Length: 108
Image 1 (cartoon, rainbow, N blue to C red):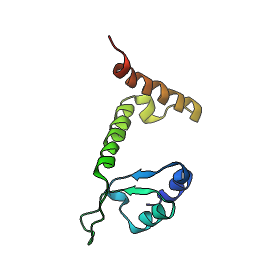
Image 2 (cartoon, rainbow, N blue to C red; image 1 turned 135 degrees about the horizontal axis):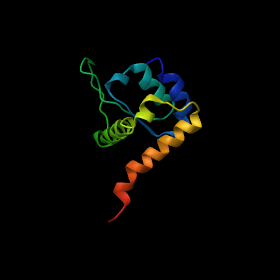
Image 3 (cartoon, rainbow, N blue to C red; image 1 turned 90 degrees about the vertical axis):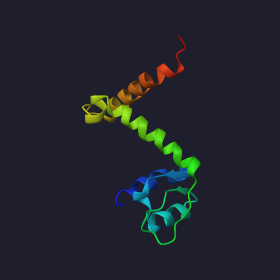
């Protein structure tokens, strides 16, 4: 919850929907999303008295993003962030992403 406001402040004007897990199911976060006209695709916690519906089709895309980060963290250099500069680190993340992407687009 503490890190949400600064991160959302950087992204609010560039996103249409926020796909998040149950940890982000808070009234304050939902109000911030509503003010910025961003769709909240967040399942409700089990202890919420009145469940708030969410778009299940959009929420399924979150799984793909989670799996991508999991695959990227298999690269030790990405997981431990050995690189000193942001440019070097992001360059290697791009290289690792392309390496993971190539088997899907290469036709043998």
